[in-house]
Each structure stands twice: as C-alpha cells, then as structure tokens.
Length: 461
Image (cartoon, rainbow, N blue to C red; front, side, top):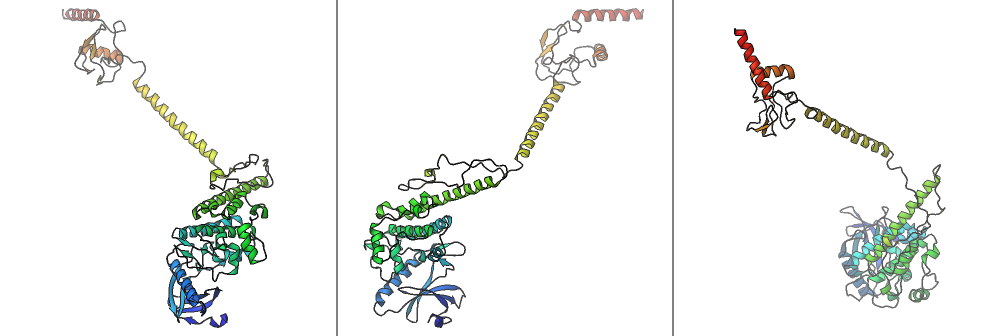
C-alpha cells in the first residue's frame, strides 16, 4: 500500500516515500513542488474511536515544536489541513537513528559522548522552556552524515503545567527507557528525561540495555526495584567515570540524579575530555615504544582511571591518575630548529653589546685621557667653570667662559703656538693649571720682558 501512494500529491507536496509510522500517524518524505525542498510530512491517521484525543495530542505537538528553535531539535516548518487531515511539515533529517546505529555494533566512547552531549544541549534548551519530552530513546535521535544529532518526536511531550497527556500511543520499545516515575504514573519533570537518556547512553557504550528481561511486566518492575549492572562490568575497558555518570543518571530517586541537563552535560563533557587525554597518551606511548632506540619503561596498556566523585559534580580537577602509572616523555618534534634560533639570538645580543662597548671607547678617546693645558681646540668654549686660572696657579673669578680670551700678548701666543700647537689657555674643568708644570711664572715673564726691552734698545744703538 505504501508503494501505491508514492508519487501522489497532497496539496503542494509530492510523496517520495514513507519514513515511519506510529500510534498517531504516518511520516512521509515529501517534496514541495513550489520550492523543490525535501521535507517530512506527518499526517494524523484517521481513528474514529479516539479521533478527538489524537487530534488534541497532535495539536499539542505542533504548538510545542513551534515554540522550539534549536540546532539539535528537528524544526517545524508549518502545519495545515489537507483533505480534512491535520498535517505537520517538518525538517527532513537525512541519516539514521541511533537505535539503528547501535544495532551495527557498540558505539565508540568518544562518539557516544558526543551524541549524548548534543541531545543534552537540546534538552537543556527545551527544559528551560518548560518542555519535557517524556519519550527519550535512541530511535527518537537522528544522526546525520555530518555527525549532528537531532532530537525528534515530541508527540507526548508535556509543556508547562499541562497534565492532559497520557501514554496512549507509546510504542513498546519505550518501556525499556521509561523512568520509575513514569512507570508509577507519577508527575514527571525534566529529571525523567535524564533517566531515559542515561538508559540510552548505557546501551550505546555497552551494546545492551541495562535490564535484560523477557516480559513487559519484568521491565517495568526492573525500573522500579532492580539496580542496573555497572556498565564497567559489562565493558571492562570503559572508564570508571563514565560508568558512574550513567549510574547517577539512572538513580531510582530523582533527587539523587543529575538535577538538570546542564549538570549532566558538564559531567559528560569532562568525561569526553579525559577520554581524549587518555587516547592521546596511549598514542604517544605507542609512538615512543615503536621508535628505535627508545628506552622508556611503559606498560602494554595505557589507561587513565578517573575516580572522581560523581555524587557532587564531575570536574577536571577531580580526575585522579594512579601514582604508579608511567608518565610519557614529551615528543620533541614540534620545534626542530629551536637550538639554531637560540644561537642566533645570543649572537645578535653579543654583537649589540660589542657595538655599544666600541661606541663608549670611541667617545672616551675623544673626551678623556691625559690632556695638556694647551691642546684645547681653537674656539673651545668652557661651559663648566666660572673661574679663570692665572700663571702662578691662583684662580680669579671671571665672568667670561670663553677659553680663547687669552691674556697673553701676540708674541707670547706665537711662541706658545710654535711650542705647543696653539696658545689658548686650557679649560679649568679639564685640567687646572698650576705653577711649576712648565708654565712661566709672573717673575719669569717680567725677566723675559726686561730682556726683550734690553735687546731692542741695544739693537737701536
């Protein structure tokens, strides 16, 4: 019969195939002939005996989905009536359900934690808007080829204080994921969804459900009374932290579970980080062991045991590693030229220091060292001293600081220029002039002046 309707038109939609059927209706894969977009159409099945109740539930699902907009929740496009039937047009999610993925084999821990993290993000968004899904199970989680998880089927979701919904139409598979309060028909809240997700995570990482019974009554009784077998006993290579997270989510008493999707998500993300660290450490140890000449004492299996207290809150600081576990040496493959860079840097610093030192010595050669009173350059201006120096070594206050203002006569300056290079008086701040260091005293100048006068008088006569 399903083949007969393929190609048929319902309004502006062409039916391409059947995606699934449930207690309320059938879901078709359709194409919008106007926009040419592929979508999912959920059609309410005619049920004369309970048409009013089913229509009420269908309308509730439409209103719930219309209030939600999250990347991990299948979006509602529109709702309308076609041929006197309620129709819901939804986002078409290409991929497989997580239940089909579990049938293929155990999901690797990293992938399972990633999928559950996305579902918890969607639940956190819905719970903050007072929406409780009440039918969390792997078959209501779609996995796309890009690895995105979409939460679907809010058919029995409860929004706000609405208590009119019942379990009518719930499929048999949901019994394996029902919370104890659902079994007892007690009021449920967001923690009921967390219990069901804990059961789903148990099945993802172990490949089996927590309660292996053969009747519906036994399943309901197990949810109420039996303790699930720890996942680490079913799958020994599972980290202890992940096993404790699952058992905490599956507590019979809602007060002992995670109190919100955010706290559950935080614990899962911490476990995922620790799992990545353990996997990277194992890969590093394997690389060291396989490299030639490596002599590092390691174990054959590299496991990180995480024994944090899940009763409070899982955090990265609570992860403990056994003290006898070997610590891998870091691989030095990230900076092969590190030594060359250090050597070049040291050489540059040395060259800078040498250049600065050479500049200092050159400056000292121009301004320091033993100087003569008579080797100041012509036109030198003394900027430091307020004192002049007399020939006998005594000092006199002078208002002029010009060293070229020499008191000697032109003949004396010529003679001193022939002897010493130039006839200027040296700066007092460089080397003060004292009598007895080769400079003629006042008496000697007088004698020389007298001899010069006598020689001129003699030459005249």
